[in-house]
Length: 188
Ligand SMILES: [Zn+2]
Image (tube, rainbow, N blue to C red; front, side, top):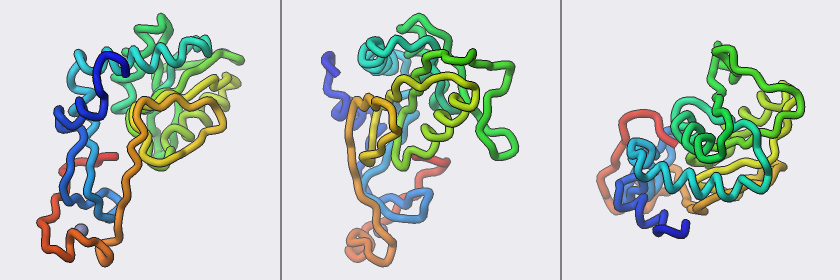
């Protein structure tokens, strides 16, 4: 990120919080990412998407594919800057698929984008859906990578932000009696 320090900006926005959090997995962590503090502001999404688009341009993507819901905003803005279509994968009956008449022609060059990647599950699901259409995933672009995940395609990460989580029984913050915060909705 040339124009500004992405990590510092995410902290300033409250997208990256320090504290004592209970993650959706049940594990505890001293950091929490609320990605919608980033995605809610188009003035921040624009330069972040520009960095992803610039990194992805050499791969000549023809369509950007993301995962609903957060990925829709990011995918739209990356695609707008690349001049491509933006489509998204969503769950139907628990399974990821293209709905709404979205389709990919065979051999279409696809850029997969995601905001925050931890296990990489949702990116892998999107890649599988794209390949099932006969299209080619030429790269994956992510804003924040929390674990050194690989997808078997060039992976463009703007910020590597590894952080650890702990079983409640082993949590030093619990041992110190620090109040535990449980962020409201599902988060990554
Ligand atoms: Zn704890």
